[in-house]
Amino acid sequence: MSVEYGDDLHPETLTIGFGYDPRSAFGAAKPPIFLTSTFVYESAQHAKDVHQAFFDGTPAPGGSPYIYSRLTHPNLDMVERRLAALDKGDDAAVFSSGMAAISAIMLCFSRPGETIVHTRPTYGGTDAMLYDFMPQFGVTPFAVEDALSEASIQAAANQALERGPIALIMLESPANPTGTVVDIAAAARVADAVGERTGRRPLVMVDNTFLGPFVQTPLSLGADLCMTSLTKYCGGHSDLLAGGVSGRKALTDVLKKQRTFFGSHLDPYSCWLLLRSFETLHLRTERAGSNAAKVAAFLRDHPKIETVNYLGFAPEGSTVQAVMARQCRGFGSTFAFIIKGGEREAFALLDRLKVLRLAVSLGGAETLICHPATTTHYNVPIERRLEVGVTDGALRVSVGIEHPDDLIADLTQALAAV
Ligand SMILES: Cc1ncc(COP(=O)(O)O)c(C=O)c1O
Image (cartoon, rainbow, N blue to C red; front, side):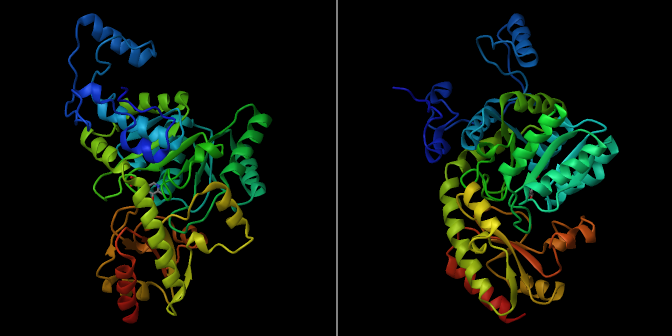
């Protein structure tokens, strides 16, 4: 009997055991944690052969393929195989945080004089990399005005090309914190057009953090790289930080090799926690999604709430609804809403909540709520923040898997006091 899964099974099955072969660990039903920094070679020749295999890509010799845990280690390999299978990539590179993954992508795939086209808004850390850090290395960012319009993405690309070759088209969909949707397939077509015109096709990267692999698989929509902060839904319990990038092996190999020198691999224990979290990802995604629909409906009908940006409320027949229907299998469970008034009313609501926890981050089992303008997007210049709808009354909620009635009761009592 075979004890290792193939990757041709349903994702719900892959999350349980794919990437781990019990024969590699005395038949242990669950993977051990390989808490070691280094691995003993079988001989001096074996040491030379495993280094050659790692650095030159020659076939792995017999015996242990591992050298030193910063290069890779067994738990990292397991997590990478499982994530790649869920994202439908050839392989994945897993990092110590989502930002470690995003910065590795920018640093590995762009060069001085080149440009990065990106959608807006984007996570505060990504924004800081694009506007504060990469320009120091001669890489210039160009923002897309309307990421639902292919013409608008093309216009940003044309503007970028006047400055220099486009290294990357970076998309975040839905975007943090507004839930703004990007037409991923349209961006991939723009990359193709740029490739035909200039002889160099930019890489298309999608930040899939807000939905995760059970709701959106960007690689199937023409993206080259799918980046996910595994800290969020995949980790799912707000107890670890990690980031993953799935895609073609030629690309993930570049990231893995450079990760060795950045020193930003994920440690064995966090990898093991992630393997465990993957097993319930589809159940948590489903439950949080259905809770979010109920919480969003409650907020939409509340007189103290101005707007609710829940994706399930996209108007019938709108472009955003059509794009969502093409590229997503649900609406996720993190969304922004705007309270009438501004910062004072937003703070009053936050300070009265008892069940919903006031914290940044998202995708955990518990419901988290925050005020993006003064937390996640604190560092984004005010004009850029307001342009993309992160106003003083905006709140972001990541709905968890509690009983929805308790969440609605908590919001009811807190809103009554605003
Ligand atoms: C959309 C998005 N991308 C990337 C990140 C960065 O991930 P990490 O916190 O794991 O570095 C975050 C964090 O909140 C995020 O919301």
